[in-house]
Image (tube, rainbow, N blue to C red):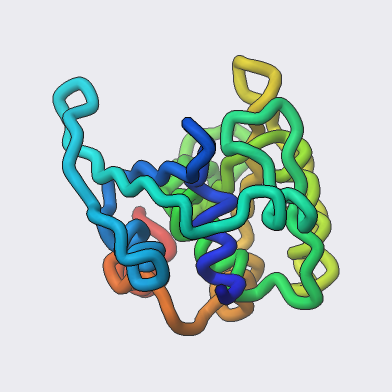
Amino acid sequence: MNNYILGIIFGIGSISEGRLIFRHKNRYFLEQIQILCKNEIYEQKNKSNIQYVLKTRYFDIEELKTIGWTDRNASVRYLPKLDNYRNFMRAYIELHSSLDYSTRYRSKNKKEKYKALRLRIYGNKELINSINSAFHTDAGVKLKSPQIIHNNKTAYIAYTSLGEIETIFTYIKGCPCSKEFWEDIYNKLDKPVII
């Protein structure tokens, strides 16, 4: 198992009946797990949306716990103990981030508005603190102040500097990867500001 797969396991894996269950709206991530375990992927309706599900006993849950894995809904989560986070982060960012446009102002009087790129990364607040530190150490971006979301368990960090956003994507770039995710990223990086 490589660190990209580990990023998927940390990103969307949960335990039920002694096995790991993966659910996501993008089948690609489950297909990466399926390569190893050969289990079937099936569709499930979630409200009005379709999500894909894969259940497997292929992975040793106790062994995953020794490197820091916890169920995705656990109260406290941290990064696994790895020598290098690049591939792990690529999977996690593909699963739990958004690159969108936020409103900015050219002057203090807030009359001239424009939209510029913003990268937000979501997760358990301790996990987000760990990701924040890892990006600071490994990619050289500034530490951010995590923003706690309503449930007091989830948080996000936001990068609004185009230079830092590009640095993060350069750092995590590699294969395997979600082509759909990266096409969207490159399209937005080609147009970082909307006037």
